[in-house]
Image (cartoon, rainbow, N blue to C red; front, side, top):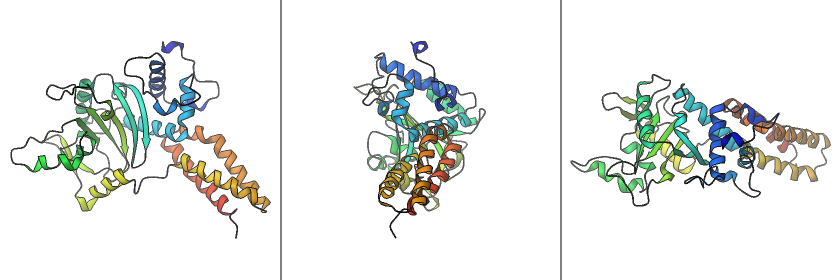
Length: 317
């Protein structure tokens, strides 16, 4: 079925997407269109009117911010596992989000095999190290609120086992961007749920500031920063979005709209021309920047700053 899907159009920025990422996107699109069981939510926000006829049209609907974050997440996983075996555990991409964190909801090919692979990354033989969360570190990724689950770890003789999903974190630099993997547990004996696997818990996302300072080698679990060292800041950022990065492609759209409104009533001809040139250039280049991942994001920040200065020059004095 995937062989019937058209290749990337000639000259399209999507040709620069990593091959494995393109394959996953196309598989998610084709299997949804074919009505594969469980695929109804694939590329969720790419399926709006008019309905896309190709994966590339679905990416157009998602927009450059979503495309850029997909590439950035792919590159993080590639750095963790240069063999790409970890990435290949993703059967489908379901939807995306960005805010206090940014990531994708996924469907794993084989959840048990995914857990084994993530545990293997503890040794760092394939790239950057990954370790399982301790109980407290995984509480925010369960079906029940963390505040309800926290007392369990305080009770004597309590078995502090995460109830709904196991989670793993990339161990890189404290308070810097890092990858977080979540795998639902309902396929495991004793964790089954009447309605089957809860796909909403299966995700891979970027935390903008990692709360991990290292690994407890004996337990094979993450060690966390003390609250005053950054763990509280990580929680505030993840839950409330404070301190999250500027989502440049999204912000640029708003700034450009404001600039066009100001330009219509401005008598500063040179300033109007300069703004319109910058705006047209950014809109033309947005996807080409997006597919470059973090490098393209940093370039988009500089371009956004130029546009913002040009818009300020249009404001009435």
